[in-house]
Image (cartoon, rainbow, N blue to C red; front, side, top):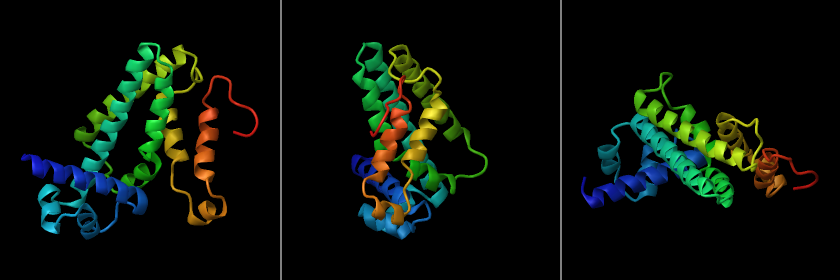
Length: 191
């Protein structure tokens, strides 16, 4: 693939992730093309149909989780305890809750090996980083990788507008409360 075509494809994926997180995976393909600054023909040349685009966004998200976990594991194995907090921050920044919710509605009932293999690799990388964090007493010993990802996904789900408007900053506060609950000795009081 030519470098300009590769840049356009990456732009489409990046924009799709943002739009899926904000509006759900049913956002119009025309809206994705417009927000990506490409023509609808270019979008369809890169992704022949919505399921293909959803699958690519899912793979992109799994790759980001795996890379963040591997980076954390590398740092933790060198004794860099800040690598754990950086990993948690990276997971929060990925907006897993919004993406997972919108993508789950679009993925087929039977997940292909094309997604299962990267999903397994990401899960293994998360488990490795978690084990190192537990060995360094940075996180609860009974926490599993699945619970970590699910918890962050739930904490970062978009809140209904009424809640977000009535209590600005509630999303990050609830996320912090959830993360404090993962500490070896959960914080007491008002986070």
